[in-house]
Structures are given as structure tokens and as C-alpha cells.
Length: 471
Image (cartoon, rainbow, N blue to C red; front, side):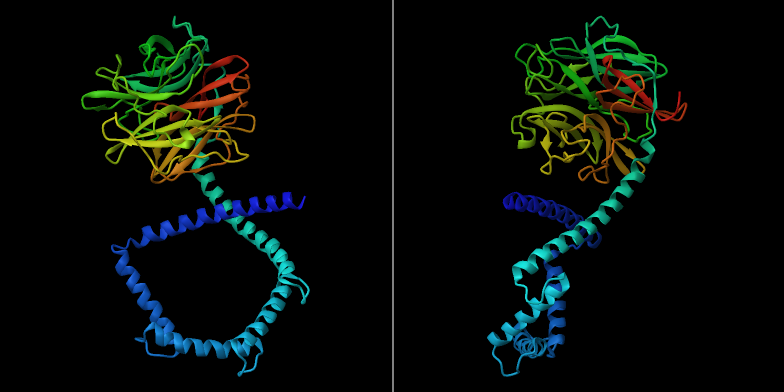
């Protein structure tokens, strides 16, 4: 029993330690960014000189004194003061002074924590541990409450959704592709017509199809965009388009494809085998098009990202990409798995084909007991008034939910603990089990956000719709 209690207390202290470490790291980073010293060596010398000068002043010697002289004077002054404080005789040696000081310290410590004046250090320590842990817990609680308040303000514009009563793309759409379920919407605009890439599953694997719409509600299927790769290829099990290169990633910008090197570009998730649902290990490929209609594989026989060279958190499967252009680079936000746990990471590139993983991965991590305890997956990143916003789905607390995270540099993210939208909210039962894999667009004609998502519930797996205003 004592061993279990000790282990429990140790876990509590480890959690407190991790939280303190995170706070200190944030504060040090902010201080460094604010100061922006050009030469840390020279800065260090200046600090050392100032410290030595202050110590010399305290010891009563010249400000130019070296450490040896300061030390001799300091020792004499410290001994006199310490002797007086401890209630020792001026002629006592250090051993005697130390014993008297120890007794006084122990007595005072006992009084502070409410222990008996004759208590030993073990009893005092137990009481200190309980008091200190409580105080630290209060302090961290206050900080986290402030952080949640900030996240509340950032996430407020993306709450309060309105339901569309039915799927906008049915689990078995009339596209003559024999899909039994659909997934992963990605909505963009070509000319005056909205386009939706969606993924279909036919029992063999994934394929990407297209639907078009004039009003973002009524969608007409237009057939296959990209299907199964060649036998033996890394994408033989099929492809699902996850991200495309857009002209702007502003939250209210029109999702219009951008050309790079005279081609439109998209990234896709894929699987090596047919015959089942997401047969591992998944990977990612790139595709290009000259007309935004006919798409071609760009990466040949080698995936742009795979479990080869993967870190522990992503060693079993690579999933969906999200493509973003910023600061002269391409950014690939993707989710990956270690066993049954999924988290989100980042890779960057300058040519769309060769990608380098960010060493600080994963950038969105699971939270114990949270709505994203098992999955932090399928990220979609946009820019909104000076802050980056990531929509992703979390799995935890009995379902898959739509979550949000925020960043000012695309590397360091803070996630709101509460979903923007919880599974099971749709009155028609469409998302009773899962509400996930979103695609967000803004319709300037009615000043409304349209959030398409994969809804899994009583009627199967289809594409549902939430809007920021009733339509």
C-alpha cells in the first residue's frame, strides 16, 4: 500500500515538474526574443562584471576587487552574521555554529509547516511536501486558468455551429464507383464553381473522387480523380487527397489553387495493399496537374514521406497531409501512428518531393483523459488576424471530435481542451460516433463559414455540413 501511495505521489510530482518545465521554457524563450542579444559571450561578460561589482559592494571592498578578495571578506562577514543569527558564541568554531544553526532551522521549519518543535526532518519533510505540492498546484492552476481564458478568446469565432439536416455527400454516392462509404472532404474553388475532393472506400481500398457545386450544399459527382497505383507501388491500396497548394491560407480567402513551377500541386495519403481499410504502413505522395482537372503522380516509385526513417511516435503508419506555403518553404502537417495512438507532426520542403521532418515533432500531442487522448489527427491550418489556426480531430471520451489549436510561428501550438464540436451533436444521428476530418471554406456571398466533415453514425459514413450561420 505504501509503495502504491509513493508511486502515486511521484507521478503527481512528475506532472507538476513537467508543467513547471513548460512554463519556464516559455518564459526563457520570451525573454530571449525580447532581448535579442547579438553576442551571448559579450553579454555574459557584462553580466559577470555586474554581479562581481555587486558582491564586492556587499562585502565592503573595492568594486574592482577580484573574487579571492571578495571571498575572504565575505567569509568573515558571513561568519559573524551567521554566528549571531544561530545564537552561537563568537569564539565557536564552524562545527558548533553549524549544529546550533541546524537546530534553529529545524525548529523554525517545524513551526512553519505546523509540526512539533522537536520533530525530525522526516516528519517536517512530509508536511513540507504536502504544503508545497498544494501551493504549486494552486499556482499552476492559476496559470492554466489564464491560458484557457486566452484560448477561449481565440476559439470563440469557431463555435456555435448550425446543422445541415442530411449528408451533402451520401455514404454511397451516385458516382458509379461502387463506394460503400466516403471520407476526407477537401473543398476548393475553380472559376465560379466549388469543387470537393472526397475519398471513397469500395472494399479494396481508397480512391479520390470529385463532386461539384454552385451553392456548397447541392453536390454533383463527377467521377474519379485518382485511383489505385500500380501493383507493388507504395500507393497500390489507393490514394486520398489531403492538401493542395492554395493562393492564400487566410481563413476567409477563397480556396483557389496556385501554380508552382507551372503546375498545380496536391499531397495525398496512401496505402501499399488492397483488400481492406487503411492497411498499414501508410505513406504520402505528391501529385501535379496543368489544368486542375487531370492529375498525375509526381514522386515516382518513392513516397515523399513514409515510415522509413520515422521516429518512434510515427513508426507504424503515416496518414493525411496538409500542404501550406509560408516563408519561402512548403509545410506538410500530417498525422501518424505508433500502435493505436495518433499524433500530428510537421515536415518542410523546397521542391515538393524531398521533405525534412521537424525535430520537435510531434507538434500536437495526446492529452491524458482529454478529448484527444488517443488521436490528434488530420490537421488543417489557416491564418486568422495574426495567428495560425489548426483544425484537427481528437479521439477520446467516447468519440471523435473537432478540435482547434493556435500558434504564432507554426511550430509551437496550444490546443483548446474542449472541442469546437463534439461527436453526437447532430439531431439526425449522423455523427453519433465520429465527427472528424474537416474542410473549412468561407462563402463571402452570405458571410458564412461552411465546415464539411466526415460524419459516422446511425446512417453510415458520409460527408456532413456545419455552418456558422443558419442557411
